Length: 104
Image (tube, rainbow, N blue to C red; front, side, top):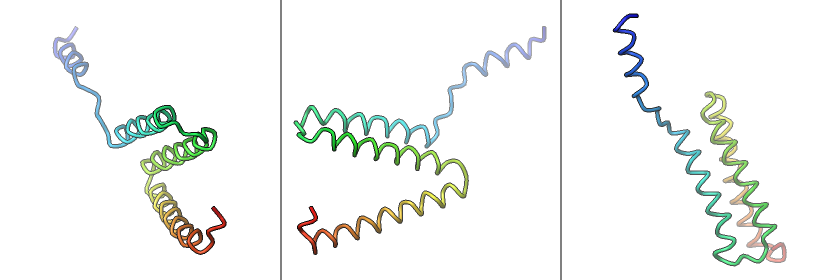
């Protein structure tokens, strides 16, 4: 047995796993959405079903867009397009609800 290869395997085992931005953002998302679920009990929200549907849709969209962003350059373009569409829709809803208060 080669002494050099044995010492190399020992040092490779000591190297910690790399922490990437994707892993940090996935972990952040987990804590974020668990905190939102916990807020149902701490704030006494009455419409639990509606809030759970909101959390479900938001979490699926968050994790889908986050992981798509790190797949390829095309994935990044898709994510930026989706963010732009969400921003435009949000602005539209602000003015729509301001003009038509009976809608909400």
